[in-house]
Length: 324
Image 1 (spheres, helix red, strand yellow):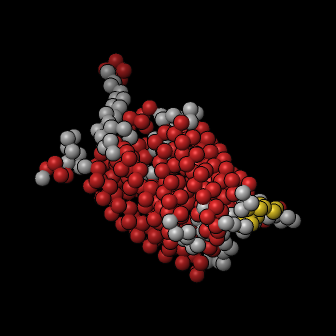
Image 2: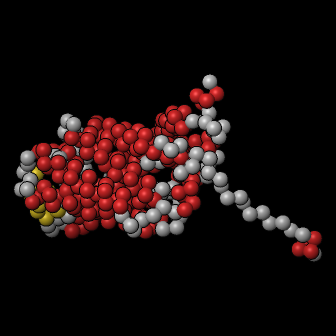
Image 3: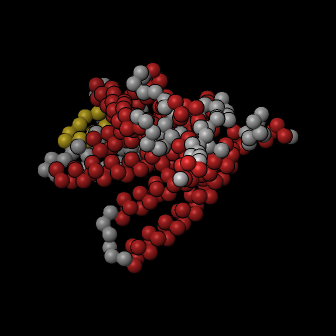
């Protein structure tokens, strides 16, 4: 019975840790969502009328998910594994900005490849979406960048955060990738215009791609850049649906889908077509072999061992001569 719950280090086994994280996440999500939604309703009913209420409501939802994922992740890392906040991979560690920027470049390039494939096959055409509306395009670029950054950060904190990390420490990395990529795909099936089978497969592939980005750096900044830039390029630059949703009203370009749907994804957008599949497979291999990104040694240690030895705090000892 002892071995069912505890490993050889006397710590709770990874499966139980993940189960408790799941309970903690949903409890925190419920509490935070209740508080923030009540505050939001009071604000819009008592306070002055605000523009962009839908934007604010969506941002609150993403913020709630982010705080719940990070809060539950830190609580479990601290209580069950004795690990510090930095083990979650979202501190300003060495090369964090490089990881973020390289991730952004890769995410944009991957989406561009999918678009090029679909366009070359005659499935997509583009027109300028902001003719005579430069100010509106700029507002859309900035507003969508903020909202999509928050959305990507929330999803990375949840799906490439504690669950993947604790399975990796337990030397169960492949299981961790599976148990984060499949739920990542499943939550997108509630979006509009889902393509049966293809939406799930492509989103699961995207989960594997983002997991590979995390595992290369053991930091959330790299997959965050990949995830955010893909979505921002998709909606704000190319004017295509983001997972079935037309989120950006004034993109730089406006994509026109000519089909066939098996290539372009139809109403769901390019993430539901074969062009996306090809790009995801190609860039997953690229990310895994990319020489420009490496893991910070401390983060690698904190996410590679079931019971990593943490550096001892430096204690200053004052002598009588020092006092004198």
